[in-house]
Image (tube, rainbow, N blue to C red; front, side, top):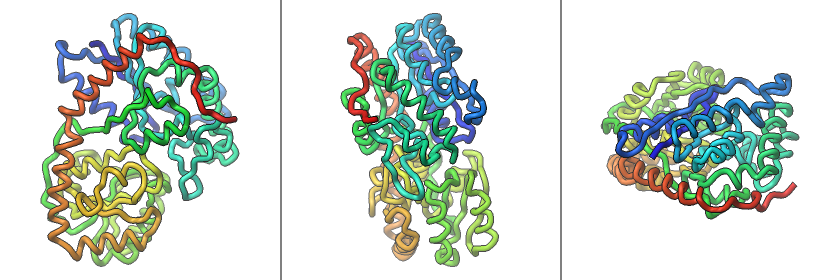
Length: 402
């Protein structure tokens, strides 16, 4: 089977980039007898209303579409697997790939097809104003980069390709990362019979740690929807009891830096390479995952599980499903700093339970998020996409309201 894997790298590195690299590496290890893998990548630049060319390419990039179509024909590609087309490649690439003869698979790493901000989160709380309808509320509220112009570009992209039937007629299979995320996309109008669930995975197995370091750990982007404010508020009281180390970067980095200077027990490490993150995970006593938006999947969670690291997570999105309360970690109410502090204190008061959770976290990784079984599932999805490619084109995307 010949597979082309396509990905747009964001301005700021994130979990999607690592999933693209991981799946590509693992497919490549199968060798010519299994899968021959090619890649097509692009890197994003800032988008806004003043750069008309960039705005038009966000909606429809003919150059990227031609290049992908040409690759499909020249390399006899059977399946084109898209991880991200936003913003440089554009959804026009789906049509080009399928017209050239390939089946098309799209992994849904976020909610971009329903929400210009991709997070279903606005003004400090979950928001579904654009789910199942054209996303003009996002323009009114300037949801993408706090800009009505930039939000309008993304809304135009979504509206154009919904009207053209791109999402319904030129994608053979969508891959949601959890059942919760799949349900959101079904409510948003994607065809349920083409939405399947396959979680992410790790290609390399990190060492299991012993948790000997006397600290809690946060790893991730420093943005409002990630619950950074809740995290810092909780550690105003927790600092003397269990120090917190924060690894990451983002718009709230100045706020985190200020907290590290002012609050005892908070250390800001900035962006760290993966090797250092995994070293920190092996030594940490617990990971804190305070995200307030319904993340489709948190790669940080399974990296923690692989290291045998229990997680204290907000009970929302994928974390609510991936973290088993009392087994691999503890849940707290999203946005509730007092409840977060209470769950951390419970673990500190029950060291035997915390040790048991370390073992259970590692078992969860081995059972669900290790590479071999996951790659077999990915190959099965490719075969299913090829089967569906041979079927007649579907009608336009159902269930949308203007």
